[in-house]
Length: 100
Image (cartoon, rainbow, N blue to C red; front, side):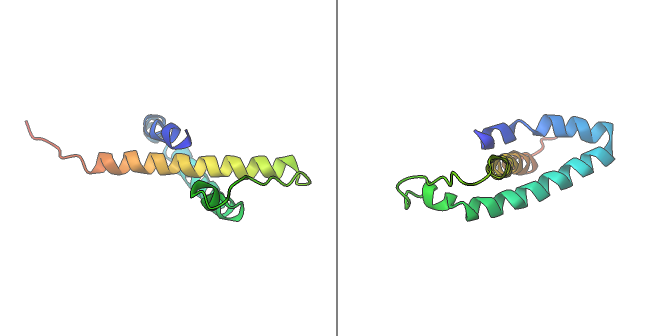
């Protein structure tokens, strides 16, 4: 679902780019930093094993604070949103422009 949500981010980011370039750059840099953290959390929490069915069940540490759990999962969601955004952005760059 996060990849799909990222595919819809192209229009709001283009609108933001047109209105204020400084805010656009700040949002883009912040999104990149959160995505890097999301990748680290993705690996640290063992998601590759869950997604490839090497791990049969999900283990949750109930002694962990809820805020850390939520921060990690939100960062992972933003990582996959960026993946969806980059896929659509890359496909848009490869379109052949026709001259009329």
